Image (cartoon, rainbow, N blue to C red):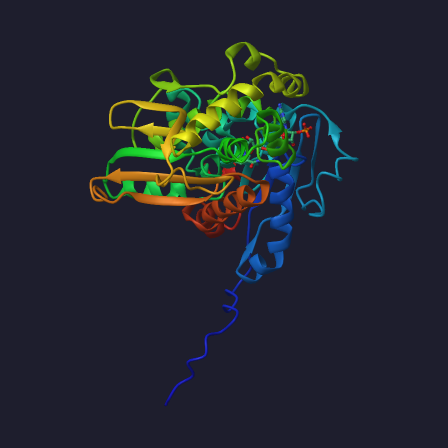
Length: 387
Ligand SMILES: NC(=O)c1ccc[n+]([C@@H]2O[C@H](COP(=O)([O-])OP(=O)(O)OC[C@H]3O[C@@H](n4cnc5c(N)ncnc54)[C@H](OP(=O)(O)O)[C@@H]3O)[C@@H](O)[C@H]2O)c1
C-alpha cells in the first residue's frame, strides 16, 4: 500500500495575517447574547488557526454599552458593563457607524430600535447577523428595505436564528429558492416554547406551571405573552414564506392565540404569569378531549398554497407533528421537486445555546464570504474609503 492515508486532525493554517472583522454585540447581557459571547470566546483560538479573527469590539444592553476597537475581554460581557457608558442603544449604533474597518452587528435583542436601525447600517456597509425577528418579520416594506440595502451597501444580512433557533430552516429555503424551486406548501411546529407547554399539559401539568417552567428554562420570549399570542410563530411563518419568495404581510395570516386578547395587553411579564392559572381548567379539558380521541395537541403553522394560518390542532397520534419531543420543532415543505414526500427539517426549536450556535454560523458565513473577502483584499480599509 502506498501513500499516507491518515486524515490530519487539524487543517493547515492559511498563510498570512488572519482576516480581522469586528463584532458589535447588541443584547450582550441576554440569554442568547451571553451564550453567543461564550461560544465566540471558546472558538477564538480555533478560528485564528483558520485565518479568522473576530474580536468583540462593542457590547450593549438596554441601559448602556462599551466599545474598544482593540477588542473587549471575551470573558462574560454581561459582567463587563461596569465601565460601560450609560446610554441608549442609539449611541451604540452611532459608535458602530464610526468604527474604522469591517464590522458585523450581531443583534441578540428583541429591540424594535435595533431592528429599525438595521437597514441604514446595511446601507452603510455594516453586516447584520440577527436573532431578532422584528426586522425580517416587520412590514413587507421593511423586509424589502433590509434586502435592498444589504445589496446596495454590499453588506450581508443573515437571520438564520430567527426561525427554528439552531435548525437550518432559512438556509434550506434560501437554497431551494436560489435553484428556482417554489415552496408549494408548508406544515410546521415552529415554537419550541409552545410545543414544550402543550406537551407538559398533555402529560398532566397545569398550563400556568408549564408556561412558567418553559420561561425559567429560557425557552420563551422575554415576555411569554409573545409566545402565547401566537405572534412569535406568526413572525416565523412570515419569515419562512418571505424567504421562499412569497410577499406576505402579517394581516394575511390567521393566528389563534392561546390566551384571550385582553390578557395579552398586560405588558408586565410577572403580572401576565400571575393571571395564567385561570386558564388551567380549560387547557386540562382540551388535552383530555384530545387524548380520548387518540389525538395530541400541537400549535401548527401551515401554508396550504393559498392561505397561511397558525393554530392549536388536535392531531392523530401518528402525525409526524404530533410525535415531537418537548421543545422540538419540525418543518415539512413540499416544493416543485419534493412533491410527494415532504422535505423535513427537525431539531430543538429554542434555547440560548442552539440559537447562539446558529448566530455564529451566520457570522462565519458572512466573515468567510465575499463581503469578508472584499475587506481582506482591501487590507482592512475603512468602509467610508471603500464605499
Ligand atoms: N431564547 C431563545 O431560545 C431564542 C431563540 C431564537 C431567537 N431568539 C431571539 O433572540 C433575541 C434575544 O432573546 P433572549 O432570550 O436572549 O432575550 P433576553 O434574555 O431577554 O435578552 C434580551 C437582551 O436585549 C437587551 N435589550 C432589551 N431591550 C433592549 C433595547 N430596547 N435596546 C437594546 N437592548 C435591549 C437586553 O438588555 P438588558 O439586560 O439591559 O435588559 C438583553 O441584553 C430575541 O429577539 C429572541 O426572539 C431567542
